[in-house]
View 1: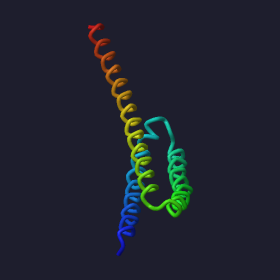
View 2 (view 1 turned 90 degrees about the vertical axis):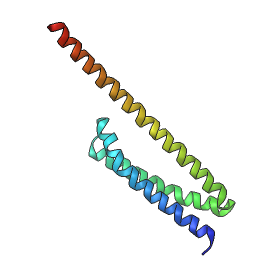
View 3 (view 1 turned 180 degrees about the vertical axis):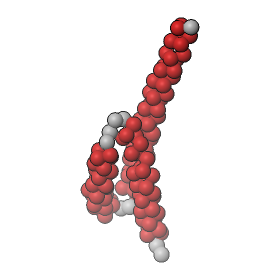
View 4 (view 1 turned 45 degrees about the vertical axis):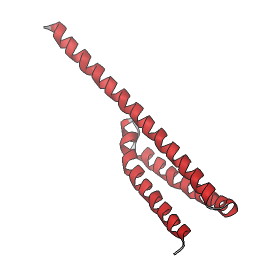
Length: 115
């Protein structure tokens, strides 16, 4: 078997794993921000539709320029997207933690002043 077939198979596996990781975990983010399950479905459908539209474009690019440049470019774009998503989730967790800490502080200080 040629090396590029192995690489293509590994890329497909990584793509499938990323979908399996994103789809179940994003529902909690959507619900925590006041979204509904229907909005989660729309987001998941948008993810699949974007993949459906982008793959032929990347395939055409790969046919024209060779395999390495599109592969490296999409890998970098995917990494940037992953870091951006992680950063957004971390910011949201920090806001929730700060809000919770402030509520606890106000509750404790309110109880102490009443006694």
